[in-house]
Length: 260
Image (cartoon, rainbow, N blue to C red):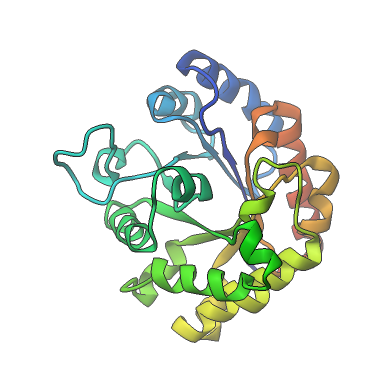
């Protein structure tokens, strides 16, 4: 059985003090759901403060990105090597980084490999934009992104990789892919691509999340799908009750045997 994952991406929200306070407030609401891997991703500035707030809780701490070089003349960047020992995970290839920061498939791959080499679990985001979606290019675009992200990543490392299907047109827009659309993209494209690259057994083990305007009132639909192993959450992760509700729904639905 794949362990479900709920990862909260706080993006550019919350000061250091607010982040630490929020983490402390959140913990009692999600402490009981040990069947779900729970992760929060504050800003770089707040990582150490949140790490202290989470100490001993079993909740994972993710960075929102990681540079592929261990050090160098890369103004404003934070390397995977610098995150080692502070964070447990890092998000890589988020659509906002691809769109606003010029993130390429090649850099995503370098970052994935750097994260793995520094004992960080990469949460690798893939997804098509609205134009590609409307042109019926979802599988071509997402399949290409998966192949590029995992180039030269060995079979042994795949147990440490989490993938997230995030259709760009559903991030921060209030729109969301239907559960059936997300299921098909994840099962028939992302997982099928993994099977081509690593074989069916490995493909069945890798956890693949859905992201894109996930909320408590639509979460059950996604978690009822066997192919969807959790969610990479934006706005709903900024509210304690909403985030806790998402974790509770994932625990309920996946414990009920909907996962495989």
